[in-house]
Image 1 (cartoon, rainbow, N blue to C red):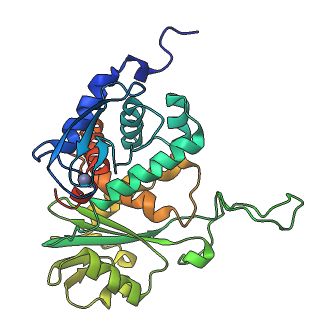
Image 2 (spheres, helix red, strand yellow):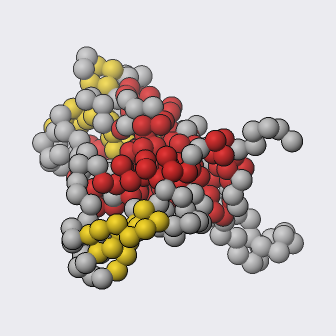
Length: 314
Ligand SMILES: [Zn+2]
């Protein structure tokens, strides 16, 4: 048995609680999470949660603590588990890996991972690019992982989950288990990545209106769906004629982003097509906060987790 089994055993519980308290209440007064009343006072502590302070609200005549109405609320694991899980998630670990490193059940870490991913994605929902924006698309093989049903050709007792489906020629489609991913990359650095059902003119127009300010310059390849997009100043390079850059017009940043995006979901060993937008959205969060290291990204994510109303600011 090694001396150090789990690193979170070295964490001091009171320090962790104080850290969460700081994340939640820095630059704002302590207030009741139910009625926003600031008429509150201390109300003891918890014997099973060292460092967690309890408060009494005179407004609603109830108690609350630093974790009320946050992701960590009523979690039986201490804050150290959560902080380490968020850190590992920002290092692109899979939920099974996190379960192993933390010593929790894989279903616990799976649930945490999705809560934390959704929190991170809420930072990104309002992001719109402007200026010069490059766009490109790819098709990601994603089946029905985790949703096996009865039946099938072989006597598996269930249908295959399609985690590693062979790619079919031609454009992908959600119904063919190859949904499209469209990336919009601003020359200023910000990115927006969308997982869509298909790559039709209508889809691309809607996706562009969500991701890019009207009137921006759009540089793409020669796909007809981009050429039909309205409201933008559009120029494209023709890859079929081996034209990859024409002066300022190229989409090499978008191609570069895909070279980073493609290996990212590999650690999950296949994804369900329902979960693909979540993975892609979290990758967008990591990419847009790439100037910060994983600890700082984890802190941003955790801040969103303990201050749900603040996510869209920043
Ligand atoms: Zn209250």
